[in-house]
View (cartoon, rainbow, N blue to C red):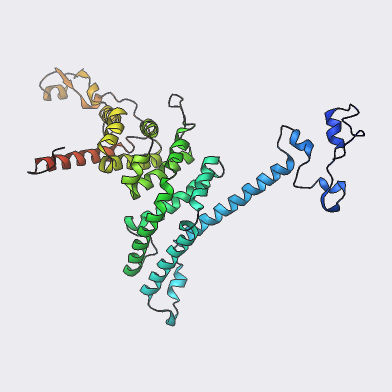
Length: 373
């Protein structure tokens, strides 16, 4: 910038006029008029409290680029497991080989692409980074959840494209091998998942507070992780998150997607959690007590059977049939209380898992030489 005794600051001019007169020298011999569209802001732009226009445009362009990449990866994962159109299934080249061999080759190629794009790169780490920074959170979480779902499909019966036993065998073995490489990448960020769910959690005392689609999707990611590796994932969850999930599970019973995912978490705690974790979730956070109170209060169909009323029948034919006009309990006059619109939600499967685990443990203790703990 120009300096010396002829500068605007030495003549006592205001800082604004001095900054306006201090035009940076244009690079590569360009004139001063070309600095307006330059991606590098002037010195006066840095002194302003607002974001420079050129920097804002660069950030928005970068965000759009990241969004395009995440959208491409999501479509890539979806297309890998998309069933082939019937037209392509009917027209088979004679030199291509048997259909079973082709399906096995496609399954092998599918997992090789997953290996190249996701397992051999830091793509998963960058997606979790986007979640932490608040950039494209829902899109990143949806892609992370889709990857876990592909790992779970062979355990749940296989994807729809596995039409042959040979392809199903290849898909199952490669999915297990891919899960061994992918799950450690997820386990490193379970603390980030916990912080994301705890931070800004809706207040239970505020009526009409909603969880939001992002929190429900993150809980689904956590449930899928615990389903794939319960022994490794359950101990990594923070104690504060268990407390928050207990409150949400009992409060948001109308959100059936959340109820299904969170109910699976409780079932994994029942079958795979340590004694300390089970005590923390079901005793210290009073989940078992509150589940039983909810079921006893509302019942299977929402009726309060403890509020039966004593009524007196008239002297008509009904009274004669009942042995006179004495008092009797009328089932039709049971006081109906206001039940939760979501019903019992995912409570019943959790209680069923608790009962099955208690029955199994009792049978093991009854067996001679069984565990004494």
